Amino acid sequence: MAADTPPLALPPKLEELLQSLSDRAFAERLRLVYAAAGQAITRLSDLDLLKYETAHVEDSPDLSLWEEMAPVIRDTVMDVNLLLNVVREQFASRPTGGAGSGAPLAATVEARRTKDASELLLGWMQQLAQGITQLGETMRNPSVVSDRWTLLAEIQRLRERFREQMGNLVFESASAFGPVTRQQVVPGHEAEVKAAVMVRAIVADLSRIVSARLTKVREAEPEDVQWNAQQLQTELDAFGRTAAYRHLRAQDKRHIIELRVRAGRMAIQDNPSKQEVLSVVEELDTIVRSLSHVNQRQLLIAHDREVWAGCGVRLERSMGLLNTDPPGAARALAEAAASAQSLYGREPRLDAFLRKARKTQLSQLAGAELRANVETLQSLLAGLEIG
Image (cartoon, one colour):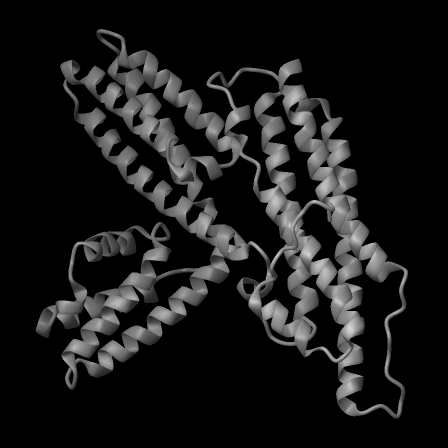
């Protein structure tokens, strides 16, 4: 870790785990690794690719782009190597302490867990080192460096993979000492989950907007075609200003930018072809629908399962209170619906319920309407396929 970098506060559960270890020297060695991992994850999450993008998808990397990206590539390598150096210094050249045959059972168990954690750290260290080698090979690949968007996409992908591997390093080594979740121990994990939830929600709304625009274009009279192209341009411009757009993968942005440029050209034509406008909106609809692949990210799958289970418990409580405590049942329903909002974007019918729930005072419902809403949300959640 750089000398001028302030120490990173570890997640409370991780701190608690370190404090529980009787081998204080080993705990402090682990602390140094975890702090370095947290610092690296933070730095690898900070890159904003927007300033490297262009409105012209056919642009190739020129000298100015290389001058801009060289520090990014250099810093990526340095951030990973800083962590690797800490792991090597603390573990690669030091034997792991053990407990003799006459040691108490607790000491023997901790010694075994210490050995397991050390081996896991070294295993992930090797994978990170291999990733640095692969990064160098990728940056020498002509098919990557000859295209601006492919280059940006690869840098984005490699940094994401490094963050994932560092998270695995922390999670798996911490798990050697007892049951923990990634959210409890991996620095930056909660922020990354929130960003993924936000991207999914905004993309889901964009999908609805584009689908509605597609219907309107198909039904448009000749005099309304240009207006629809203008509206599409406005809608894409609005999406480009969202936080979700910043987190999209570079190649997805490339396609959206290309279609936004085509829509912009048609928006200023006096009589744009309906078929041409329709073609752009159909392509956009296909691309936006494909963005639902965000649901396959492992961190979202884990998050969604946890939320799904929590909502189920609240709804069971609500159902059990319907006859004896209707206000309590309504409050439990409102809590379940509020929690389920973070599932928005996973399934269209659930999305429709959640949009309606935002405008309804669920905690004030009673009678048949309360029961109907509880049963509807239960049914929608039961039908979800997660993972």
